Length: 65
Image 1 (cartoon, rainbow, N blue to C red):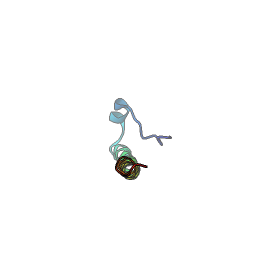
Image 2: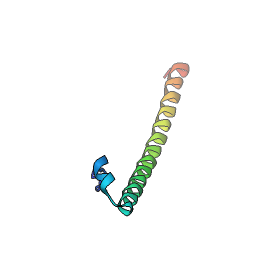
Image 3: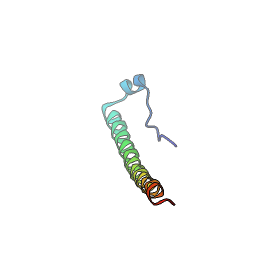
Image 4: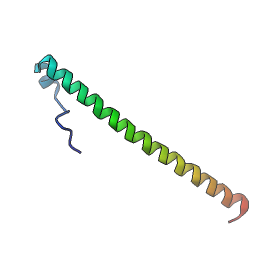
């Protein structure tokens, strides 16, 4: 995945102007929020899968499939 120039070393960050620092920080914040949103969707799918798997194994044990 391309980082779009969002990864900057500490020394390079220190030498930047204030407006450039603000832009880098903002872009990193947006990137992190997108990744968290994707993670939440993945987490919901995992919970649904685990719920269905639990129901199936419970039905198999008690009903005798």
